[in-house]
Length: 304
Image 1: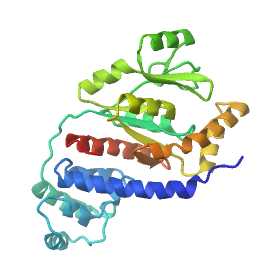
Image 2: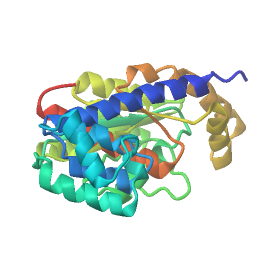
Image 3: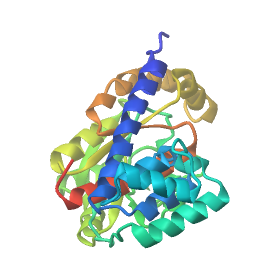
Image 4: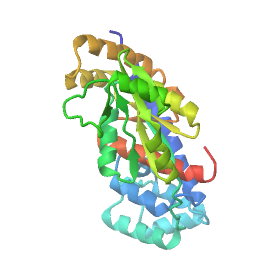
């Protein structure tokens, strides 16, 4: 097999996405749609987050009313170097900066605005693992449960991992218009997203995460243009192959079919709003949740 050259391209795209995400954070703070304190807290909670890579000086400059000269004086008073990033702060520096932000930075109230985010990517990239981590560690995010005609894998629970249904029941749900999207995946099983729970959650002002395939992501974007699409990338093609073979849930023929599909799926990443490289499950999950929060704040003012 001749794998696509994803390493360099993925790194380049990830760098561009990171710069855009940092700019989005700064703009949200400047426009009082995201609090500087929450940015600091996120950075300290997850050292792999976008916020963690933000320079302290840039965060301060994003606060309304603080210009370069004043920020430099504040940095000196806080005993923080101008090149220091949020993730590199010492314990005492963290305390001093947080105390300053609590007193000086504008408070942003929770608007309760709902947000629909779609997480997709090639087979074996770890979508299920990342979404499961989010479900277990971010209770404020509702993770949609898909229906599928495939058999359960070891450890999967009906109604939690998926709704495992027969072909006849899946046909009935299609006929009744119960799916937001559905598709045949890997030329074999069918997957679909029940619409009623999502509509109810969004109406209640909750954030909803859909973990689906790329075909489904396209359908959701057509049905709900305001949805944000996040593409989950592997660190390298070799790692994707290792993960697929290592889980041992498919035959050799199925593995070959899935890898062939993965090449096509990787080419679709430019259709997505953001890209997240899944090097570490916890960091990838944190980044997806951050993007949901940033986009929620962005939506408040009707911007993209």
